[in-house]
Image (cartoon, rainbow, N blue to C red; front, top):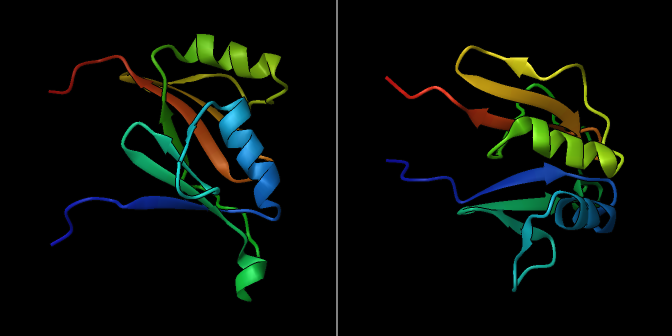
Length: 119
């Protein structure tokens, strides 16, 4: 029935600020047709302002968007140099490394790399 995820939407109180964060700080590729859509590989990442649609803003918590990087430690250091504050130490689950942080609106994100092969 479901064949894929078309896009992931992240709420924002300031779409322009969020666009700058996702494009300039995180390096996501901007969409050529929509100002507030960006690409991480084949996944479309969208920013929207709930208040402009008559909805109340609430940051997304506990459903971390896992942003793949080849090396979590290196990517974390690069983002820390850009002013990103991480929430605790990098976590090693035994099969992957995860480093948790938030966007300017408080939405939960993580850097992720699976280093163990799938069985």
